[in-house]
Amino acid sequence: MSRIYIFTGKGGVGKSSVAAAHAYKSAKEGKKTLLVSTDMAHNLGDLFEHKLGKEAEEVLPNLSLYEIDPEYVMQNDFAYIVDYIGRLLSDAGGMSISDLGMIPGMEELFSLLKIADIYKEETYERIIVDCAPTGETLSLLKFPELLSWYMEKLFPIGKIGVRLLAPVSKAVFKVEMPNKTAMNDIEKIYLKLAELQELLKDRDVSSIRIVTTPEKMVVEETKRNYMYMNLYDFNVDGLYINRILPADIGNEFFDRWIVLQREYIDTLKECFSALPICEIPWYDEEVRGEAAIRRIADNVLADKEVFGKRIIKDRESFTQNEKGYQLEVFAPCADKADIDLYQASTDIVIKIGNFKRNIPLPNSLRSYNVTSAKLEDGRLRIQFEQEK
Image (tube, rainbow, N blue to C red):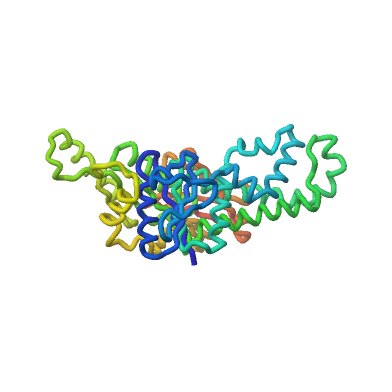
């Protein structure tokens, strides 16, 4: 079975070089490896000093690079989805298919769908993903679940609406209701989204790895990133602290920086104690070309089992207790003051900072209400009790 390793982190922390070192090590182990970038500011070609095109290209034995062009992927791999959405947009507001990429989340969605298709082809044993900066990565990963949630809510209405509203919809609402063929297309899209969501959250397949540097602002964003990833129940299984100054640098100018870095490294180790942590030194040359990438792979990753399954146990779960049921969501580094939650119909809605997640409730809990919620030891515990 292939595995997917997704590298994320704040912009400028060295995600691409860390991901590239893993891809290089994987290829040297004899594993057919694909290093793919979903960041619109691609730099894999620059890293390996190789001009890349629209498709994956092998640059070293067992190692291929692929810089995804979402617009190209939309038109060449998912034409049936683009065609249907394009027709819908045209009827709704005069938009054309060329405007599809302007819809928030669309480019990210098609990038993920392409990665899922590559995974299913089983051409590569390891797929290593160099993602965009933190905020864009979070949008990328949560989009399939969010869109699937909306489609689940709309499906029952849609199937009835096709029959009842089709004669009047175009005249009244200026939108053409999907016919039976189009509904099949919608179902195809929904199924692909469901498969994608299942793939990204399968702990036997996908791993999220966070790259950071020992700086105050970066450390704080890394903690929030970890919290949000766990809110959405992704398998975060590694932390990489990059650009660590050597303790024996022998220059007074850097003495204070070394002390500050050590303080931030200690903070990161305390917050991420549940994860394997890898420390990467700040090298005396820019990371560019095979020799520089090999240096990281040989110096830092050589003696580490970085491709093994690291299934972190902490994840959301429903358990029965004497009062009813309890939902536990792993929310490391969360602040109680930033958490808001409420029950909305068949979902529990959890909002932490600027991110919100709808967790569907099992049918057995539809007659239960939230009676309490506590944040303890990085875990949000929500109690459900039956209406009396």
